[in-house]
Structure formats: structure tokens, C-alpha cells
Length: 548
Image (cartoon, rainbow, N blue to C red):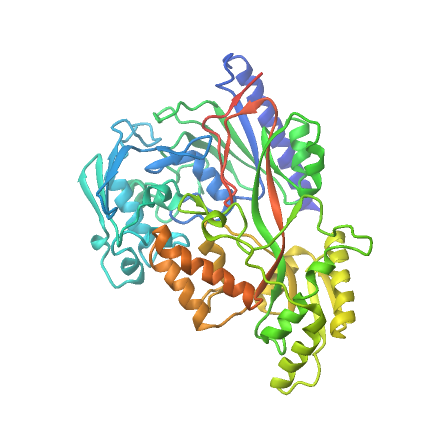
């Protein structure tokens, strides 16, 4: 009860503070819609604002606005200059030269220049095995990066060279024409060595009262991080970028997971938000602007280590009923409103080196199986391992009415075609995720949600060595395909291996896609210029302004 009361008080204080800031800014707001306060809600506390360590969406969102790498995204998602004002490569795309702006500065009072050495230190630190950066693999295309991270090469051997304070040369492990497209990502952002060392391990964690452990170089800088309450930033007056920074204040409220974000839009608490699926219909006949990203795939996940479930023809038999299960006896679709039928595991919004993966790899990889012959194939598979019948089956799924209706429908078909009687166990999402991570399940209806806009983010999760392999798959052939796709990063070199790995998951029914979830990033009609980044949930407010 005390904790609840404290949270209520904190939220009230947060609301009062925001109202005060908005009132203060009214007098100094300009008529062109700039120089105002923008508010956005984080879904939880950022874990770390260290660009070389952060991997959760809330941290990456704040980092996107307070730091800047060699390049950044504009409001349309196109690459524009960041700290680097221009760049070039050799004909083979094995060497890049970045020329840095002389007016790029850190957010300290002295306005310390951002130099090429800041990037070298940041990348070496990310790759240091002792750092244990969860995102350092993004740097592996750089020469010797993987060896440095594995501890078999010294950090000085990394393929980055300081030509002078404002010129950085990067040597690649192989021809990589798409390298520049990766440089807006957080792990590529600079780190000021002297400041980092002065924090004695607190860098990015903000244990101080005035953000004393965060030094940034982006459009905004932190003035206060009130843990579990808000992160307040203001325009970084030291920042001189490709575009002028429009907002004066950028305020991130920290809210609970059960917050109704559409309500926050309606009552003008925030200027933009990712809204829940059940609120999508409310957008109809309104002036709200929105961007959609098809970024999550829901489907049947199989624990390949469980008796009988580990047999391919058993899994195929179970999935032979999916198409029929997705409609009721009146022909009405049971796919929830706001979702789209899925024919592939990798969702349609995923890019590969700047191009849509589905356009490059094709689609329709999901196979269909004949329910009329499914029982015979299943029984043959069972007899091959001396099983006379299917073990008792329990299907776990989210405790959601629409999902449960779909699951009941498919279990009815399992009884009709396979003579298999299964139990359904609805769970809250936290428990569902825990059961899957522990391998305490046979079949699950579950979302695969990439945390990065890259097909490998999904495919690598199913490798034998993955720490959180949800299907507990162990197969050298699949591992080899993912390794081949990971070894080089030219689109033409890795596309075939990626497509083959995705087809493997479909053909052997490791994860069977059913429908896609669409993320709606919504802006109030009165604002424009916000860029929403797919998959990592980050948004860039640099160009956000109010419009008539």
C-alpha cells in the first residue's frame, strides 16, 4: 500500500512539473511551432544510458535523442550527416573515411570538441571482452573487431585509425557497401574517455542528482533523471547539427506497463505514443497521424526437446489444421482485429542493409500440410521412436479471449483429424515468457518480436549456442546457415543463407507463423517531424514541431 501511494504521489508531482514547464514555455514559444515542450512516455525505467551497453528500447529511445553518431536519421528515416559532415569509401568498400564537423561538441560547460578519438575509444570499449556489451556484434564488420571481442587480438589492432582530430579511417574485415547505414546505431556513438574514466563505473547510470555521470553530444541533454518517474532533457545549446533542433524541452515520463497511451494522446499529456491494438479502431475518422510497422510474428512454438514434439512429422501434423482453425464455422476470421495473416516468420517491415528483406528474399515460406493424411504421418513418426500414442499435450498461450478462441478452435480440429486431446493453459505474458525460457512447455502460441531491424536478430535466436533459444533447437545444419549469414554482411553474400535458414524453421516447423502484429506509432494532429524507428521503438524528436 505504501509503494502504491508513493507511486501516485510521484506521478502527481511529475504531472505538476510538466504543467509548470509547459506554462513557462508559452511565453517564449515561437510562431513557427518550435521552441516548445514535447512530452513522450517511456514504458519503463531506462536500464542504462551508456550507448555501448544499452539494449532495451526505453534506454535506446533516450540515447537516440541525447547522443549522436557519425550519422543519424532524418524525420523520413533517411541517413543524414551526424558528427561526420561527409564520408567516402574506396571502390571495394573495404575502407571508409569520415570527416568530422569542427563544431561538434560535448554538452559540458566548456563545450569540449567531439573528436575522432572519441569514436575509437567507444568502439574499443564496446569490443573489450570485460565490457560485455550486448550489442558489440554490430561492430564485427570492422577489421579485427571479432578477434578483439574474443580476446585473441589487442584493441589497438581494431581497424580504426585517427588521421587527425577530425578525420577517422575505418578498415573493414571484408567488402561492406552498407556500413554507413549501421553508424546511427547506439553502439557506434562516441564516448569521451576522460569523462568516462572520471565516473568510476557509474557512466550512463546517473546516480547523481544533476546527471553528473552522463555527458552527451546530441540534440538534447539531460537535466534531471528522477528514477521511476521521469527523464527531463533540454535542447543542447552546444549542438550544431545538420538540422536545427526544434523543441526547447523534451520530457520523458516513466509509466507502468498497463498505461493506456491512447488516453494520454486524447488528454494531450503526450504528443505521440505507441498505442495498444485494442485502441487502433479509435483512429478511424480522426485527424491523428500515424506510422505502422509490421514488426512481430505470432505463431506456434515447439519445444524440440520434448518427447514426440521433437519429431518433424508430429509438428507438421499439428500445424496441418492451422488454416481451418483461423476461421469459425460461419467462415468468420478468428485472427484478431488489427493483425494480419502471416506467411513467413521474418515480419514484412524487416530490412536487410537498408532494403526490405521480404522484397529481397521473397515470401510465402510457410508450408501447408494435408490434414487428411496428417494422422497417418504422425503415427508413423511415433512408431519410429517406439511410441504407441501421442503423450498428453498442453498448449500454453496468453490469457487473451481472442487468442483463446483461436486455440480452442485448433484443439477441436486436433481431436477431429489427429484423435489428439490437448489441454490449454492460458498465462499472463510474464509467466508465459518465463515458462518458455525455462523450457517448461510442449507447444506455445507465442510472439517472436525482433529487437533490431535485422533478419539475423530473429534467426540467431534459434541457434544451438543462443542463450535464449525458445525452441531449444540443436541442429548443426541450421547453425551453419546462420553462421554463413553472420560471417559477411554484404547483402548478396548473406541473403541466400538467411532465406535458407528461415525456410528451415518453416519446413521443419520449429516456429509456425500465424499472424503479424502491427505497431501503431501515433502523433497528435498538432505535431509533425517525429521519426519512429522500427523494432527498437526509438523515436527522434529533433525536428518535432507544432503545426496548425
